[in-house]
Image 1 (cartoon, rainbow over the protein chains, first blue to last red):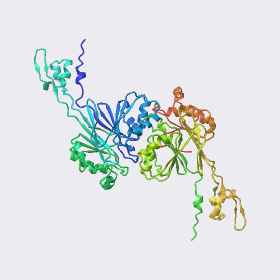
Image 2: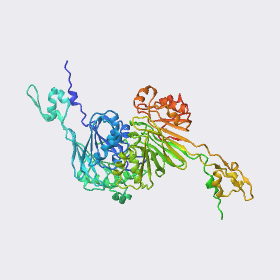
Image 3: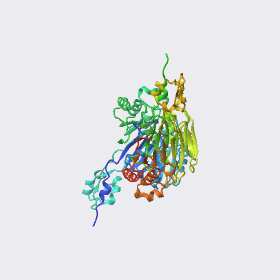
Image 4: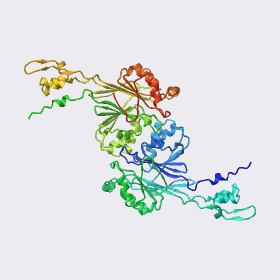
Length: 318
Length: 318
């Protein structure tokens, strides 16, 4: 019996999963409304955690994401509200008997402060934790795989701090199933065709690639801009991204406080989004002083209408 | 004008506040139902934190307790689910501009692992954190003030671990307002009378103390028994306490697992409560494996009926 398994190669949905899960979007002081900062980027079911504030593992569990799918954590800076969840998460993965490497990308100094804590509280580790430290002063590519690159976005905060730009790579063409069925293209030809080749039938007829495929969707980009002073030059670095997360700690009435503490107001975040011509803006890292974050949404949307308020358990497609 | 301020000295309610607030009652693995272990004992509005699992500061805020009233933290052992909330809490108190000393009572080793973290993440501390380390092998008094003593309860776990016995001191007699009004006792006599003196009127008549006061309520005791192998000898140390918290990580079906991991089952916890003749049992530290903790309540109550399941935000008077 011959099995036609062509559909296994063909049935990828045109748009693969690329979405941001908000685990926490508060700032340093605890409130009854928010957890401190943590997000999980789901790229084709590979999970990338971005910052890991206290309680991140609890929110991770609540979000029904799978711990086993988490392989990399990116830390924007070494303030507690962005990384105090690490010891708990690392210990939990150990209790769960993880064996796969866990990679932590973080500014210099992270390993020195966290490695002793991990080893004190986990006498025997079932898996390796590997730190990859970087300098936050210049944009550097800190990760790359088949489908994605991650590059830092230098920011200005009270300590070395950066954001991260997650960029999909241009994918292969998508096969048009009806056409390859019609021309009875054999399975072993499909990869070549995905990569642009024409198909020549046994009778010698050339079927041009354009008849058999459609171009892939344009690659998507997510920019995560963590704690920073309002930095107009950032617009250039996040130009045209599909989704921009930007901190919006303060309302305009507290602009002086924002400057003093090296943070951004909601309308400044919206200004960056507008200058950069991004498709959508997501704001978070709300100061504990605002009972209702709607004032921040209101101020941002006045400048950049396509703005969304982050909230715990929100999932936003990029 | 003469102000009669006697009522300021008299109006203490007979039963002063002495209650346990549960901030978290799960165990190490995160669930959607529980936070890891932390409690706050409120003794006449002085707050004593007992263990400080990840997220304790978030739960503290949610419970509407006042950070400024917290002065002492007692850590039972150095497993992450009992102390990973410390860095966040210490940093938050710093952000809030605390100036009062914070005392952390913990097993040996706590300062060496936590002090570097506190100082890395708080470049300038607005208040001193003072560690008071103890050996968990023998019962030692680790704290005393005007109204309370705290003594360790040695336990058997996979690492040095103890519980804590919070014991009210015998208070002074309570003044009977109607009687001191009737005899027109001057304010300056009240303290002496509270401490047992009779009152002699200007006319030379002696009013016996028993007419002016009632005895104070009996001092109350709260025993907190953290992670431990079933330890029958513990009953002797917690004999007759008003409220016993005991870990009850497992159900009876998992008794073997309880033994292996140095934990207690719900019915073993109830056996201790029964042997010790305590007034009320509160169980917690539930394993993530039980979707419903009711099975643990059911098993414990079969042996010791006056059992309560801990749950987040529960407040239990001692």
